[in-house]
Image (cartoon, rainbow, N blue to C red):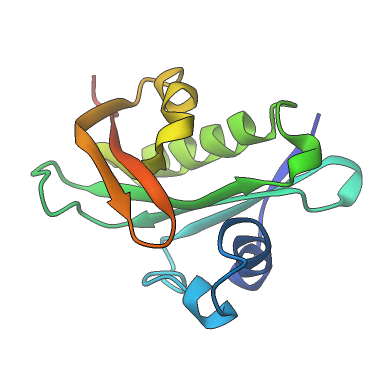
Length: 147
């Protein structure tokens, strides 16, 4: 299995660009809150090679009243390791980070193809599917930590 570690934001941005947004500029892979001290950036390292990333930010959703809220963004794994549990370990690290920060809710805009993955961890879809321009169809997925 992989070792999950905190990583510098620069490492996260490299894989964000490569895997999630190859058609965008590297500058477009910089997210608001990346440099916030409370933000967690995690990497999956089987055999010391970075093959997966996830970041979690303190960020409220404009349509959700619960607070303190945390947002998962930029979660991705290299194609060759998909299905090997790296994403699960990264998601668990993000959930643990939000719990350590006394978060009450975690949310993300999940690609429609991975809503089942998030559902295994208790995330629930809220509302209808919506498009993210240049990226594709998504659902708002929410996990309530105090339930």
